Length: 305
Image (cartoon, rainbow, N blue to C red):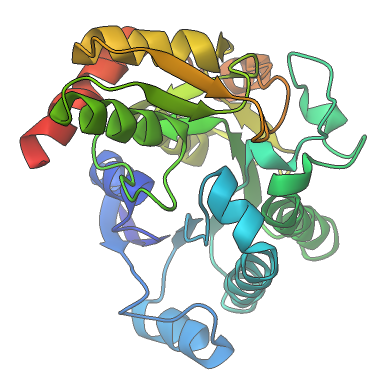
């Protein structure tokens, strides 16, 4: 058993699932910002001194959907860089046995060949609304790689695609696409099935990974992967926003119309990962199909509503 697996952001959406999954590896300590403020170097160092982690899984992030990204570019790049720098630097200084850096699909170039391969990560500028967040995460992944080369730092970089599932962020101002659509359709149903407006043309495609599958990938990588080269985590399957909206509409029983407002941005035109390295290096394949995952998420949302 491993002593003290610290999960930053461990009480958040993904963190809760990862904490459950890693319980069978050792003693898990899920953190949130009320316990240690990772934006403070002193607070981050106190965390390392207090908890003496063997493994750190860095999930803490300042993040949101297109609207939140567009409105907070300075905040997103600043806080993610500061939290990541403090956590990685001190992991090296305090001789953590393994560090897991969770990157983001937003780090990929806007016009990246599909499916996205890890080798294309630096071959262009990210989609503009996601760029501050994506560049911050990409910089931190490079920090892990650089520490590995110079100091033999045992850090791994995982790049998950868009996640969803129970306990997702259902805040109307900052949610990602699946919870945002669920909120919109539920609101329309509550108001006699009125028309639902969706930002963009609906033509953009996305890939979605069920949160518990991502937690499984992190567990398998901790056990079996010891290289700082980034590895994609996803399903390898894409769906257009229009197809996704219609799928959610059917599951939820919304009887109104859908209006695509093309005055708003689509974001990245397509998003789909090559997931062959995850399968090769640590045997990961996503198990939850999109229909099952959406039904679970909608059921959880309606139970909590």
